[in-house]
Image 1 (cartoon, rainbow, N blue to C red):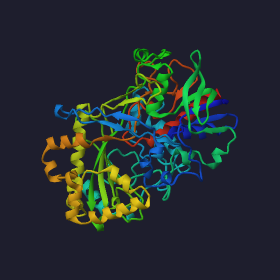
Image 2: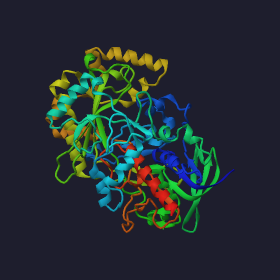
Image 3: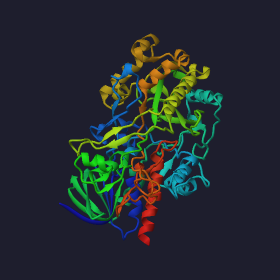
Image 4: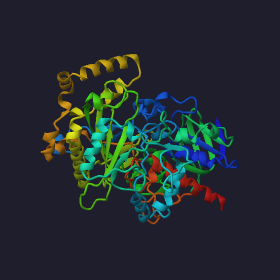
Length: 564
């Protein structure tokens, strides 16, 4: 049985947990334990699909929490109430967490995002406060100067415009004619523009937190203990002080710690708190849980980015070379213009290939996302079995402003696809089928053979039309009918893996705040949360880089407190 005594125990080896493990173990006088429920991915033994710069790891269920589902709870009309909006929801259960599964997008958001945090009670988290920590994360291979880091553990790169396909260049023309201007650097602080997508990878390999922060040299530190395939069963207490955790799995037993840090993400960090009796008191009592701290905000304020995409078969001359394992190359951030909504509230992603293998490499797509939603969901424990997966409800597009802006976003996607330059580079538009993409990208001889057969059939226009069937999208017709647009939107909208907000950071006097600006859980001692769950308001960006910044800044807060 495990019986460790350390200075810090970090619960969760995801995007934030890996950063914290490296930063806190730099001091040889501090002992650090990192606990991860999923597999480890050490150097020289990292699976090829994780390292792939095309995000093929997304298709591998071994890297995700099993049986995790989310209710989108869409605002469906009465005639569609039988529509199932419960999604199998992928959350990383592997070293590196969501950064090991996601598309490696390295957008920071806008300065206004972080000034909004500061103005909402997060003192010390404004743009000028967090910029040095973004720089600390990054090793930007394309840009230097005061806005960029050159020595960080995470490489940031963009695909050079000279390598962009004709489809991407046609989309640039369409975006320019919609009033957006092109910039070289999407992380220069500009809110609305388009340009090359910054990504956390080299030209050959993904670099998530697991690869960037837990390298071989870091892992050799005698004061860092990594415990994979081990899950925290409970927090240990002495009065109001958390003294450590109890584990089950490959390593079972207990870890006593001077400080316990939850980095389990916006789904599992609030679940751990609630199981420990920290959360909305009335709800916990109904579940038979003794209430230690009545914190109404635990599990509330759940935010994510709604998204959708429309695919299109590309003309041969408009495709990127088969040898390019690149997906996200061109990104745009723009404003909906809806009254009472923030700038840069919508995003567009033009993909030159839906996948690296046949027939996906013949398919492009235009995707869009609502970056600044008003709708809020929640995470709760399931009645009957407290060990079961948490219950997730997004309340997606329940705020009418969100639904209206997603209609605007879909109109923008279709307008880009309908631009003459883009039309000349493509054939039919259609709704993508992720299951087929995953099937043909399986890596087996059979999947490659089936994919090549599908590609040959897909190249024949009449056969392609038959294969697409009802998934075809009539772009012209939809642009003339807002009611049809809205109906299609509610059919195809989904969510990203950008879950944040369920243990909100802010002014401790606010009854819905869970952690103070030093990341300490209210009314407890020696317990912090450092992950995406503390983000009070979602940023106008994919969230991985923001979570790495949060962990870098919070590591300093922890170290400063212990230096006193």
